[in-house]
Figure (cartoon, rainbow, N blue to C red):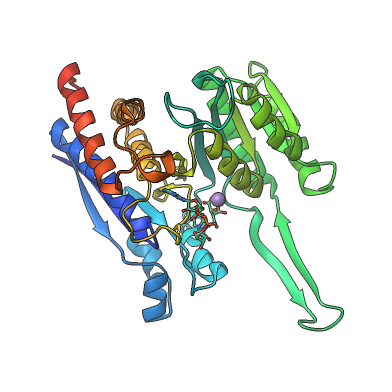
Length: 363
Ligand code: NAD
Ligand code: IPM
Ligand code: MN
């Protein structure tokens, strides 16, 4: 039987609560399919680990992770450990160390998902964000000069290499071509007079290789406004690391809430494992209460299935989530429900099992 080895980093706050529901779903799929199985190996890394051991992950942690087919991560960061330590020594270390330069974040409104916009159809919110995930504003380069003095100056440099910019834009063009969709670039060359001028230039250059792909380009401030006013104009979107981070939280809000939004950190060359995670954080305000919405983590589990070549199962997970929303009976408080995290996972498992049986699916 084929075995997929998945490294699990539940992480901090609600991370462990939501990840266990995703694992439930993956195990169920493997069980019903019967031709493959998952082998999950859990790593206890995170802020609690830091408090005990002074490190966010083991020194040979990256070597340990290298052996896996994928990494499934909950959330990192918790009060008590500075975010710049916890994130840079674990989440960002993995994204960068494994050259996961593509961050795929679907912003898609499922039927019956709570949308704060008026008169909106599901088809109007269906964007695929392709966020640059390895450099840009997250290069980690800068300086802190004359600390505490009157002339104190802090520099935070963005780094946009030709290689890094070309590869993410080319990747996005390939996706847009494959899906027959418009590719929108979001930048800010009016104010960022080096990085974004360069970004726009590279986008223009690469667009010549894809004459069949329709393109659009917006400044990030206008794009934020248009995502609310007229979301349907966005299909495939390519943007820089920081803009992609911010706009996908905005997108999550219009596509049912942060508890529903997932992201895949992909190393397309498959030299290193890719990593799958909900886009939300550790939510310290609701951690430990078994009320976190597990649907984002479950959506990222569906991305694992897609990535491993089981797209039909990935779709089935999303169909089940949609059915759960339509039923509207078993939802967490962020979706105006009264159910717990584990009750949502359990209900989803039974919806999925019924879907399997009703369709008598054979893959
Ligand atoms: P957050 O996403 O953790 O929480 C923002 C708000 O959304 C909170 O009110 C929270 O209760 C709610 N929320 C988030 N996920 C939810 C879910 N699944 N169900 C229901 N409600 C949910 O963002 P934050 O508060 O800005 O950050 C908290 C910590 O998480 C910080 O340390 C931050 O750096 C970190 N963080 C980590 C990641 C990651 O690991 N990928 C992502 C974002 C933030
Ligand atoms: C995300 C998070 C991270 C990011 C943080 C925690 C470093 O906000 O995955 O969206 O900015 O990429
Ligand atoms: Mn974010």
